[in-house]
Length: 490
Image 1 (cartoon, rainbow, N blue to C red):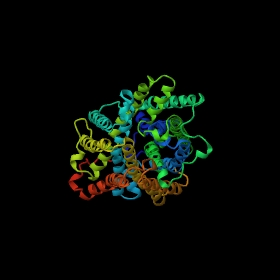
Image 2: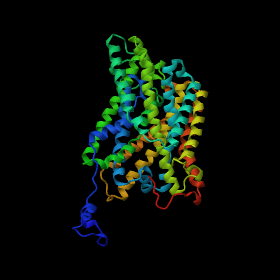
Image 3: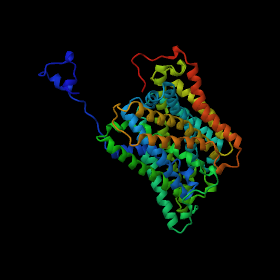
Image 4: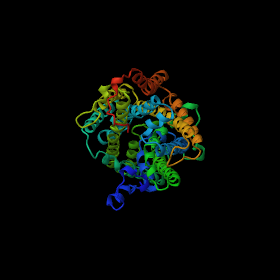
């Protein structure tokens, strides 16, 4: 802040050293665009979706590139403009761009998607952990349900105690649970092919595009939207760049290249080793590692890799567990969107009642793994519900961004996305298409009951994503506002 910005009534003599110290602009901790790209990569990329795309073989390259172009790029650039102009996250963006009720819906969807995200994430953990103990457990629904319940409630206990330093468990996840296993898998896969073994999936030019069998053949692409989600979280760092207009696009395109390198080669490696009809969507990575280690007589390495993957996944779960619910809590305390019971904090200042309530729902959902005969089907259903709930938030974000550019064109923005309205249009259309396609059972699960599939997906996505927040909003009371006057949403 310069001297002319200091009110005269509060100024001090120029000779006073406080005048210099008090008017000096605070130092800005700049980061490089490469650092931002790496931060983005670590928060987006993982090996978890690789088995899902390995089903398509060489066509997975196409199915990764399309969502990157129509969803990842618009999401990154649009959220960067919003973050550089309005603090407060998606609630502030949507509230100012559309309305406060829609802002609540957006922040609710950010939270609600985790209700189904944790069962799918921990389903992957259960299948991976099975290869450390007994590979036959990977397809056992009861085992999967037990692991989900135990891991989730342990995470709630850790988070409710306000434990510091949990983020450190996930900070090394990119290296321990992603880069090292990914590089190892691709390297061994190449050696596997180099020894004259035939690829389980054909790798010819004729297979660059997925075989067309109607919309059902493309449904698994919906999972890639979830893989690329979360970019609005990283957009807050745009103001830490020295030249956001030039550096942020460079960071995002570099990050996209890194993300694709982490996603595509491991998926291809799995498709070389494990035939699509034998592939488990939860245990596919471990299937590939186990098969290739068996090829080299080193199956003793399989449990070690499994522990690395499990450690990284659990660390990521702990860092996410309290975050979205904390944002919902602060908004609700000020606006009265949730009943006081859900707003209560424990002695450590943690929103324990929200976490416990979420845990009850997660436990019920976990039983789906025990009741649905095919673990892969359960994993897919929960993944698609997670994606659809999250996509509701993105639909609102794109609308809000376009309206804010039109209504507040002169509002200060540290970064202005090029062709913002066009980006919003592409992102909105892609998000809406992915949301609708998710209601179609994938061709890989065509033998199941379509009516049951639609009932579960529609009930989960529309019920949790729209009906529940609508009821909270309609039933709210003035007494539900519990925030202190100076408390603001975060």
